Image (cartoon, rainbow, N blue to C red; front, side, top):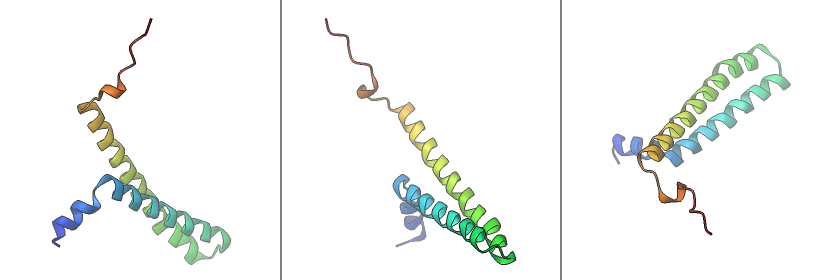
Length: 87
């Protein structure tokens, strides 16, 4: 499998959302760890790596939402139209 194929698989919306969720959970775990063990090392890791993972997670989520919005605006479906009034 080439590098391009791996990147293409990772950038699918479903996979990107899964990666974003895992990154956010790891970031939250690091931040909670710094609350329970407030040493210099734990706080530095939480503020550096935890915040970085949280930011990347947010950016991945926004990318997927922008893709979905663009797709919805380009391809409106009949299901989105309001139903006709019956008399």
